[in-house]
Each structure stands twice: as structure tokens, then as C-alpha cells.
Image (tube, rainbow, N blue to C red; front, side, top):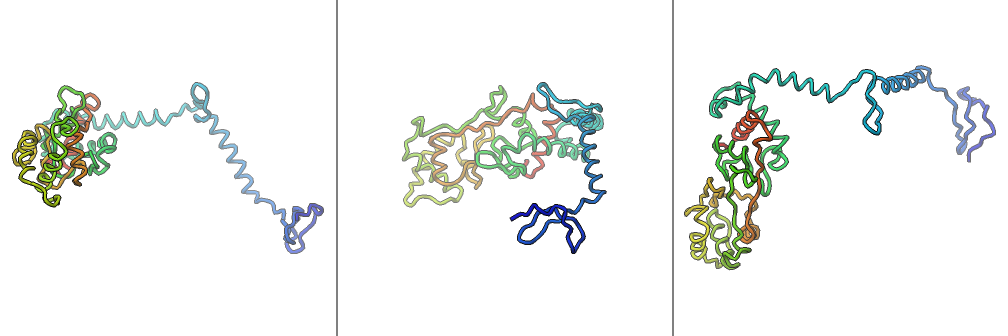
Length: 293
């Protein structure tokens, strides 16, 4: 228990007064703080009060206190960005007018485009395609050489500008029909053609699958978009079904779901949101990731 009856008691060992508090025979010494520490503490109080006066600090109902200095980190950033734009201005103007192929041939323009494109990609495209552009389920990997709408510089620029099923007049419009939901194929036909398609890329098939019947269904229903050899068609956004790259997954259940309910992912149109030079920079950046044709 604490003993409050000896406030002026002096500790015999240290010669320091005690606070009068004692726990299990251990007494608390009333050791004063070092003077330098006290003055430092007071200085921080003065500094804080001064900061409140000269810098923006206190929130108000209709804003905040501006401070005597009128400092604003946002205004400072705007100034720095304006300086950066002034430095880049000439090069960005050249980038806006240069043909895409010429940009990749010019080391200076290529470096500028890739640096600019990487930043813009991170701000606008990474939420869907990933920071490394590796994609995810339903969002294409931009590092490989499998392109739904074509992987040339011009085709990539077209896709970035207008998107796919974005509502823009020049957007890519192709989509995967819902063969099952719309009654175009029976459930049995869907399973049959799915197993045939799986066989094209070396995936396992159900025991006893009638691949000949699946090939017939494919020829009558799917070849108009994917081609007779199932190699796909960039004009329609139809993927190559003979490789091992699958946008939504290669398991049988997912493939059956695709044919039953269809697919129609949306790629936004960036024309109007991003200026022409920025779109060119992002085009060159994506093309240089390794999968561009």
C-alpha cells in the first residue's frame, strides 16, 4: 500500500527527497528533471504555438486557418509541376506529333515515352492489369504475346484510345455470346465443344468425350469468330484457343460457364481523358513490355 505520511523524507542512500509513495518497501524518489530537458520541452511548446500562427493548422467550418506565411503544399506542388512541364514541354510536343514507329527508333523519345507511360500506366491501368501489367482473371496480361485486339503499335494505340465495349463509337465491339443462356446450344453440346477446345491446347478431356462431335459443333458455331483452326481473330477480339493462355481460366467449369453465359469485359476509352502525347507514351510503354508485335 502507498504511504503518504512522509513527503519530506530524504532517502539515506541517494540523499534525494522522496515523493512519499512506497510500494512493498520500495520508495519513489522525487528526482528533478534535468534543466536542459525542461527548457527543451518549453521550446517545443513555443515552437508549436508559433507553427499554429504562421502555417495552416486549424480546421474551420468553411476551410482552415491560412497562417501568416500563406503556405500551401498543394500550391508548391503546382509550381513544381509547372516547372517540370516547362522542361518537358518541348519534348512532349515532339512526342505528340512523332509517328509511333519513329518514337521507338529515337533513344531520347523512347526513354521519355517509357518513363511517362510507366507513370500513367500505374495511375490509370494498374488497378485492372496490375502494377507489373501481368493481369488477372478477366484482365489480360500485357507482357505476353497473346493480344485480343492485336499487339502492334497502331492496334495498341487504337485499344487505349477507344477501348472495348466502352460506349465510344470507335471502340472494339466483339463479345462472346451466351450460347447456353440464349438457347443457341444445349448443355450437352456445350460440354462436348468445351472438351474439343480443351484438346486443341493439350488440356485433359473427359473420358469418352466425342471430340469429333465437338469439332462439328465448333465448325458450325465457333469458327466464324475463332477461325477454322481456332487461332482467333483480332478484328473481333476472338482469342486463340490453341495456346495455353486463358483470360478467365482453363478449368472445364469455367469454360462451360463462358459458353453458357458469355463474356463481355469492358476496356475504358482514354481518348479525351488523356492527351494525345500521353496516350502515345502509354502505347509505347505497353508495346515495350515484351509482348508487343
